[in-house]
Length: 213
Image (cartoon, rainbow, N blue to C red):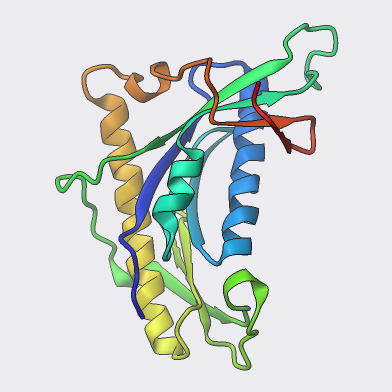
């Protein structure tokens, strides 16, 4: 089976207020729903906050992941009355989605003895072609809590190898994000968030997508 190279994305609220943390969480859920619908796999590591997530690093696996990334990269706008500050006038929150450069020097090694594997029953791309055996595998890195899933292969053994590979890739993606955030300016990526010309727009607490104006 052919696989595209994984794509690393960073979702960030920049230095925005708590409402922008809510926006990150809502956008991440939208991404998860979208990738499930089109048969891509998304591995995620979030930096949680009290009201959502400050940022998240995601690794997109599967054929068509490049087109998926293009649809999301840029500034995302969320219009909603604040549920945290009811009397506040803020209506727009802006979140940035950046593709991270695969930097060969930013690598970490996963020790297999630190990984717990769990098999489970899972459907195929888009929820179709349900597996008849529990061949899907979830790999969890105990020291960090990071997880990755593989279900494409018929063999549980091959899914185990793929899940471990994806866990390694997710850890590399997080290391790359940390490197990018630290070089030159401590908040280089966060501070480049442009609050204009959004590529996708959402509205309300249910994050309904709307046309950008």
